[in-house]
Image 1 (cartoon, rainbow, N blue to C red):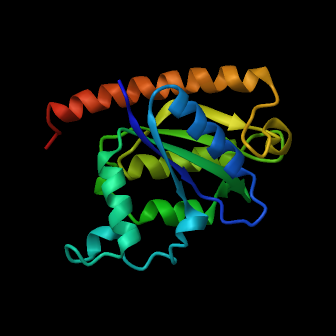
Image 2: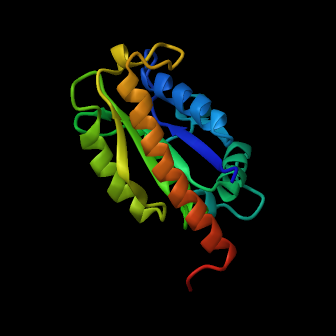
Length: 192
């Protein structure tokens, strides 16, 4: 089953490493037969949240929010690519996520975290789990942490180690299972 999967990247830094992980995810999802779309906080340049998408009168939201809302409503699940800033979620990621709510409901998320250190961003991933659940797109049980991202992935997102390819395959198998299951349930109706 072909899935539509936005890949959300939260890094706003000039010399960011997360784009490497996003490139790997996009290429891998497409190779698995899915439609993957990069949602890049740096490219979107969304201002700090003042109004959520739903707070605009119908048809009056900025074009970039309308496009994201359409993309999100068609999505079967979301992959979140986030680094760890001071043991927490990247500000660009949190801002990107907070613009929407209902568009995320009843869709799973998968967390790909990274850092230049040994822990692979897992402390931020734990905070993301809480935020994603509150937004209605609970994360799948497995995480995909990438430690020492500067050495683990090339600039094009090519893994330097076989373990990374194997871990990503297992992670995506699980994510796809949840995405297919929730897609089928959404087609049968939503809880009231």
